Image 1 (cartoon, rainbow, N blue to C red):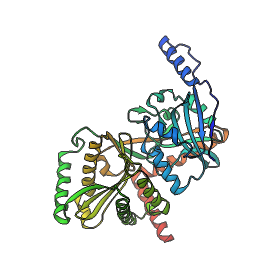
Image 2 (cartoon, one colour):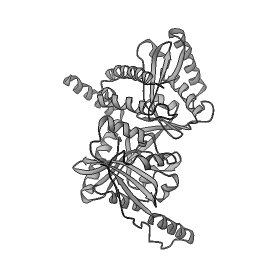
Image 3 (cartoon, rainbow, N blue to C red):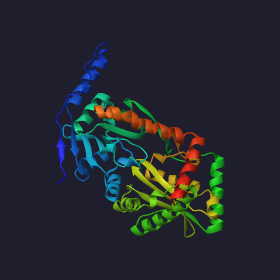
Image 4 (cartoon, one colour):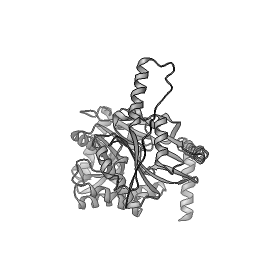
Amino acid sequence: MSNARAVERHTIGNDDATGADEAAMRHDAEADAAAAELRVRVYDSIDAAAEPWLALERTALLTPYQRLGWIKALVEARGLGGRCAIAVIERGVRPVALFPFVVRRRLGVRTAEIIGADIGNADWLVMERSFARQLTPDVLRRLFNEIGGIDMVSLSNQPQSWLGVANPMLAFPHQPSPDHLYLGPLAAEGIEQLSSKRIRNIQRGRRRLEESMGPVTLRRADTPDEIAGIHQTFLEQRAARFTEMGVKNIFAEDWFVRFFRHAAEASLGSERPALRFHALYAGDKIVATSCGSYAGTHYAQFINSTASGPAAKYSLMGILMYDLIAELREMGVTSIDMGLGDFEYKTDWTERQVVYDGVVPLTAAGRVAAPMLLGLRRLKRAIKQNDRLFSLFKRVRGMLRGARG
């Protein structure tokens, strides 16, 4: 049976008010009083934490990769691979923040990470907007210690801010992540971020695609059969693309297939499901797909695919994104991200942003392991952000895959 472990309350604040003016002292006193009401309740399963998690999602700030529906579907498809520690920060009896942690051994030490961080595009916590400024390093460190059984907390690909709120975790030492995140607002009307030349090219591609293959329409999957059909086409298109690139097709692995199907089907009927498939049709053929998720007024395109062959010359992703953004605006979506990874087409719709890795050591073992973990991430960034090194890396990777094959 799953249990929640309530942690005793602790007064957390800054007692050093030397030289502070009266306003700052009042602010510190208010922060101390608020922090005195904080406690951590740790849940050892996702289902046990569902009630406070969903309560927070209704009003809190989060990315789609910390949604209960997203993480629950992932764990059910792949398993957890460690100890579940859903840490809910409460003020009185009300949840105000949540860290969906899994604790596993990395470099020999017990490390708390966001569940699904290895496939998600942004590590963040679930929190009320007004609570962010109270999460000082001292408060966070004390709260992490209260979870128990952790040597260090590791977060990767952290945005500097999310929907206007600064990331409290970046008060700890941090460094740029290997990849960039592509993120941007959606204006109320029009495609302001596109040049007139780019719009003409997209519309020209649409006309030529229609002349070649039939009417071009964007459709979303709203039934299990539609999900299955678009998902199968996505798998085929991705397989062809990854074969060209000489990389492993992670999306074809059994657990990833289960994850996509489960996440999409579990929230059918929701206006903003945990995962939604869209498909661009030309006639009766799917020529491009998009798989994405929502968090409030934000949409995240997790992955997409396009057809190879003659259709590929018609700016398929440009057409799909043009129509998808129009749909999102009608739904009231005000921001979008297109995930990690540097691809030129993303700059039509979003802006490249640096994201950050950070490690918070809590024990002596954590203090030894933290520099090693960050060093590995710096090495990965050095390779990925250097064209010559990354090309060499990809050639070596292809040779190794060929040898194994």
